[in-house]
Image: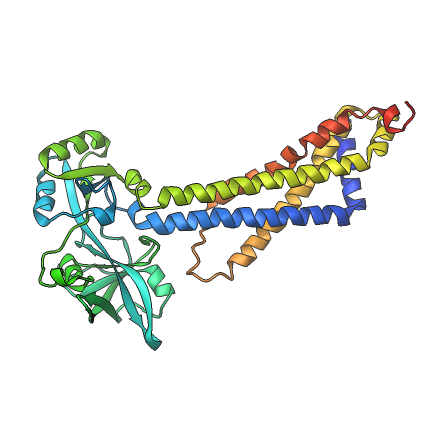
Length: 387
C-alpha cells in the first residue's frame, strides 16, 4: 500500500510540474476522442436512417416475392398473395407495405424528399402513433408523418400537405390531411410518410404504362405469428403453402438493405484505424518521455525505489493523461453535436458511445506498455553512466 501511494505521488507530482507538456498530449487524445465518437455516431446515424422503420416492424417475419433476394424495392406481390398468406394457419396477422419516393411541397418553393409508404391501418407495418390517430378508411386522403418531417418543416397535426408526384411525364399534386405523427420511422435515409394502400397507388410516381393501374402493388408483407418461437417452422410452412414467395426475419431484412453491411463495415474500419493511430501516438509520446528521464529513474532506483513503484507510477501517469484527454474530447463532442442540423445523420447511442469511451480509455495504458517495460528494465548504474 505504501508503494502504491509513493507511485501515485510521483506520477501526480510530475504531471503537475510538467502540466503544459502533458496538457498538449491530453489535447491530442481529446481530438482523437472527438474523431472516434463522431465516427461512432455517424455509423450509428447512417445505420439508423437505413434500418429504423424495418427494425420497428410489428411482426416477426417479412415476406418477399421469390427471387427478390430479400431486397424490398425488388419485391412485387399482389393482393391474392396477401390473402393467401393470411390464410396460413399459425399467422396472427399480416400487413402489406408498399414503398416509393415522393416530395412534399414546402413554402418558398422548397421541397422535402420523403419515403412514401402504403400501409393498412391497425395492421403489422403501420407505425406507432405518438400524436393524433390512424386512417379512418383504406381510401381516406389522410397521412401519418414521421417526427423528422416535423423537424425539417413547419408541418403540424391537422395541416394539409401537398405531394408532388410524377405521373407519366407530368407532375401532379395531391393534398393530404395530416392525422397522425409517428417517431423513429426513417426509411432508406429519408423521413417517412404513411398513407392507405389505395391512396398510395394513386399518389405514387408512375410511368406511362402504370397510369391506369388502380390496384396497389405490394413490396413486402409483414407477418405477426401466433407463436413467435415457431419462426423457422412457420417459414417452411408459408413457403409450402403460398406460391412464389420467400421469407426472412427482421435482422436478415436489415442486412440485405442495399449498402447497409458495406456501409457499417466501412465506418467500423475507420473507427478501428483511428484507435490504432491513437495507440501509436500515445505510445510514441510516453516512450520519448521515458527516454528523457532515464537519469531520474536511475536515481530513484539507486535510492531504493522498486520496479513496482516505477512501473505503477508510469501506468498511473498514462491513465491520468488519457482520462483527462477523453473527458475533454467527450465535452467537445457534446458541444459540437449541439450545432449540427437535423439533416446530418448523427446518433449518439448510449451503448456504442460507452464502448468507444472504454476503448479510448484503454488505448493510453495499451500504448504506454512499451515505455513501462523500458522503465522497469533501466539499470541504475547505466542510467547514471557509472557502469
